[in-house]
Image (cartoon, rainbow, N blue to C red; front, side, top):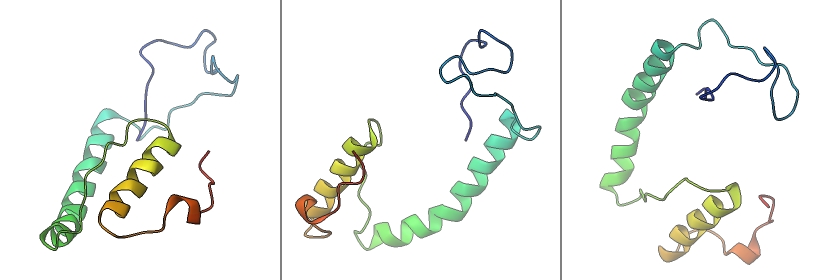
Length: 94
């Protein structure tokens, strides 16, 4: 998925943050992204429903840093008696 900042960069085709080059693929349009999301939903919904019916789907917020989301995931797993404990895993997300 793409994200377009609400403002143009200071220099054309140059990232204001890192100075790297900016470009947009010809197929990265709103219509294309909407179609990709539609296909993803159509393909993944039956799989999600399969696991939801077996009480194996848990929703968590994905907002925040990788470390915060990872911790939420680990807590959700531990609450259900699944997964490793945080101290048993390599802390590669900080």
